[in-house]
Length: 144
Picture 1 (spheres, rainbow, N blue to C red):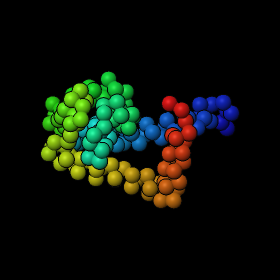
Picture 2: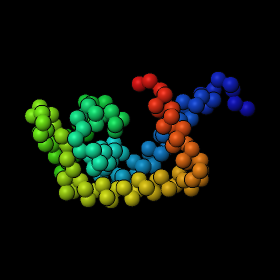
Picture 3: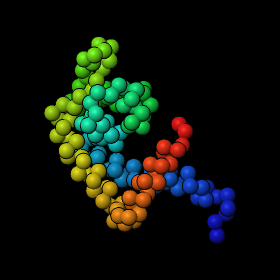
Picture 4: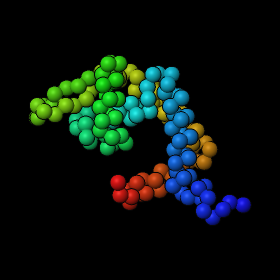
């Protein structure tokens, strides 16, 4: 019998446990391509919203700005992205996927989709969609 106040009784612990397991599984899949989970997030965002500031990008990819800057430095040296001076504001830097970045995101997107497919298999499509909706609601309702 579980103690009412054991760590496993908290929803925050359950969320953290699920996140850790899924993150680690995805990390193993992407390692084959030399890409971190966080770099995948950056590439996905850049493919759809290329004109974000570094601060905005950090928020969307769930990273603090100094850590994002280090990651982007590695991605630039790996030839995945390059920095471009903003058109409207010369002080602003935009990131753009390189040809290699576009190729890499196409490859790893299949791995990420496979990870999602496993989740759908484990809990079913209906529950997975409900979970996604509930997590989105929770995220919107929870202050930073």
